[in-house]
Length: 435
Picture 1 (cartoon, helix red, strand yellow):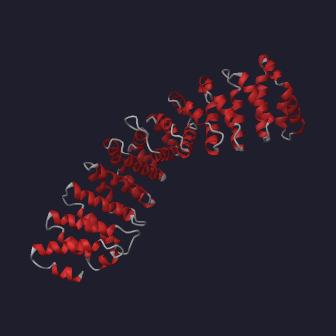
Picture 2 (picture 1 turned 60 degrees about the vertical axis):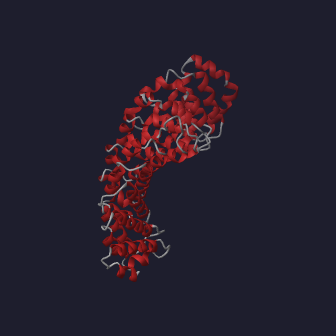
């Protein structure tokens, strides 16, 4: 290296060019990157970067080689600074691709992301992405995902309006799977920071994620893409102030599209998102119109503890809403009956409460709900479940037609109810059974 640096002091351009190429070759030696940088490679490369366009590409390649390391080394800041310095030079697409490749490597190094964001690497990537070919845009998207993995970087990335760049990329790359997945990953990570959620929503994060949920030309998204999109929507819904925006930006149809993927993790995140959104009472009527009820009914799977708990809670919230009358016949009762068979006690408690709510609605079919309530009384369960079922039967028993229906089940149910009256401790439950 010393010989190369000394020879490069020659005034002959050919010698300078050959020395720079030699340094580039040396930088490709695996395991010697830190030693090469310590011995003065970076100042040497920068001093020769302005000689010609061809030599600039060689310099960029050498820096790319020096960034190809599994972990951060002590002199890596010199490589960071050199890359950021050279990013201001005029480059052709091939050189920009090498530059972004080096940035992508550097953003993947732990404890290096925050420094790069502070030095303005987000703006550099955003500028290059505007007119870059697909392969370069994929590297940009991956770099954003790497940077967002550092909690200290997220606030500054949001302030530099990274979401706008990702929105442009997803719209201009014909729904490329890799770009969609990495952009959704970035949004999901940014949304994990409470201070960033409002800002990224204002920048169009929800619209960006919603657009990523759909595949073009009749194709299907990969499972990985659907997973990160579902996770992003779930994370964005954690802030109650975002629910209105989620409804406005058609998040419900996007969730329905994701539910068609039978992947367990996709469906769990969709169920959680819908459950959170149904807590927002002011938007339930619009969610109903967009197909949220049918989505919950489709999701209702008693074998999945997470999904069953979220679906049951969402349906219970729905049934306490004034709009519940018009959606009862959309499979809600059947879904609750399925969910009542869950192994989770909390889910069964929620189902019993929801069935009780159903008995207050005039559109509920007694022929369907009475057998379900009696079955829950017959099954093993806590006093809360049986108390709500008894209360539901009490509501129904105020109608003589319903009483006749109950009498058909009397041989199966009476002994159970009487036993509960005498041996169950909660006073309210004994009163319901007696009534």
